[in-house]
Image (cartoon, rainbow, N blue to C red; front, top):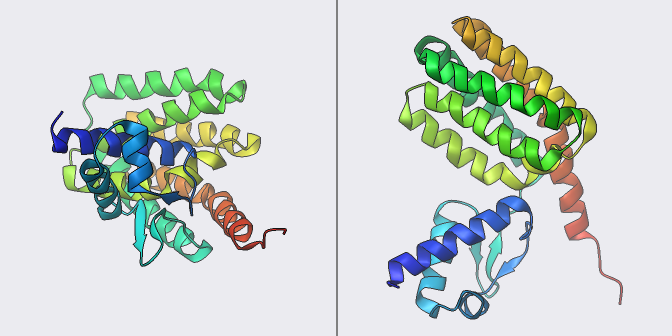
Length: 224
């Protein structure tokens, strides 16, 4: 396996683990351990870490190596506000540009997610939620906007997914999706923009609270 292919494989696996919370904010990532774990040389392990650093998922700290990036409450709120603006505009564009067959796909995902929300199956709902939002910003037909959303969501993935393990947020999220779906289906750009903005900001407080709680845990002294 080439160095480039090996580093890409390691990067993708680490990214999935960060998003799933297997690697949590503040956790160290050591290239020597990665090389042994994934049975590659240290060069692709090092390159994978550098790629994750470039995408904002890890940071390189002098004398400490690479660690999974964590956010403070202020950063969390700022990113949530930015995401609300980006996704709201994507929803408005989708209402104007999404073809009928893609609208049908969006509706199908929304309907499929109802049972996951009702049964509080967070894992299934999170997967469908990702597909739901991706369908909308793909439907906006603005690749630059889509890349900005993907990059922002990538930074927020662990915290955002964690919020959907809360019963009240899970149920509310599905209801809010309905407002977005119906506005896009009706071709109402203004209503779609408002519905998506409200949806993203609705989860903002839960998201910021999770960030603050995790940061508090990170700062807590360990018992000797």
